[in-house]
Length: 112
Length: 112
Image 1 (cartoon, rainbow over the protein chains, first blue to last red):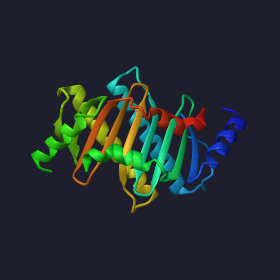
Image 2: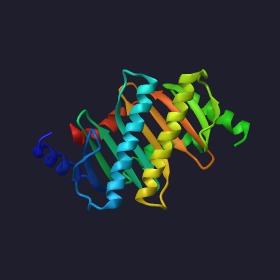
Image 3: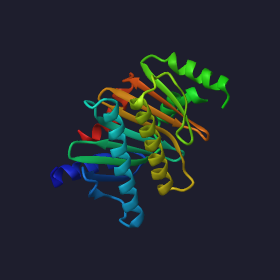
Image 4: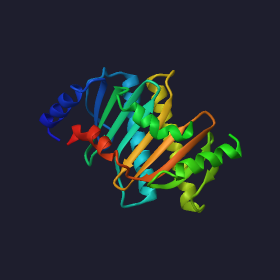
């Protein structure tokens, strides 16, 4: 991915409402770009997200070796983390709850 | 969770179109109920899902110790895995791509 492509993706995502942080890592989990302040907490966060993404891929491949992870989304009380892995890099967005949380929540409504 | 509640949840989820498998585990990852055939592959799958769920919770708590995982969703080329953790048990649904894949894909469209 060229520097220009990275800048283009950053710009496009940052224009979305509610986006709090943006991280792009390569397939080995190394940081390519972020708008977060780099410190030990951010480094740990990136490490955790990379590990989560690997665990999700492992899970899917165990179910079907020909299948692959396209998208991973965590919803917490406060934020959403969207993880979109590609062959060479992974784009991660941390954002406030978007309008479709109700949609996700309704998907989960079988537990209530 | 009573046996009756488990049966009720199983019944409700199974009535959804596209549902391929259903698993309920307790907070330690032990199987409470499933409609899957139990073998080594299923056991590994349950272990992987439990670990993924723990990794997601760890990630969210690292960002904000007062926050907690509400919902986790993986989208692969073939299936979706929906993981809904509660205090005492976690409900897991494996389903075919539902109609809102386009929605998820459009959320991820900043990478294309």
